[in-house]
Amino acid sequence: MNKEERLNVITKTIIGIAINVHRALGPRLLESAHEACMVYDLVSADLKVEQQKPLPIIYQGVKLECGYR
Image 1 (tube, rainbow, N blue to C red):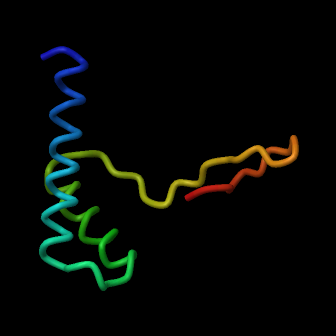
Image 2: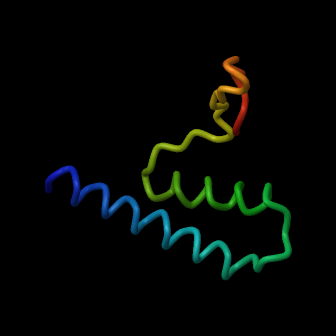
């Protein structure tokens, strides 16, 4: 399996898990509940998961270390 095919399989797995979690929990729960269930299912699918990883943002020429999570 080449790199593109592998990425397609991973993407399909992630989207499928997201849909299943949404169907099971519905739209009204907090994002943190959906995140916890998504992480559980992603790890169960043998995918490596990093939660709430800080990503920098450049603002007015200054690099802020935790602009996004």
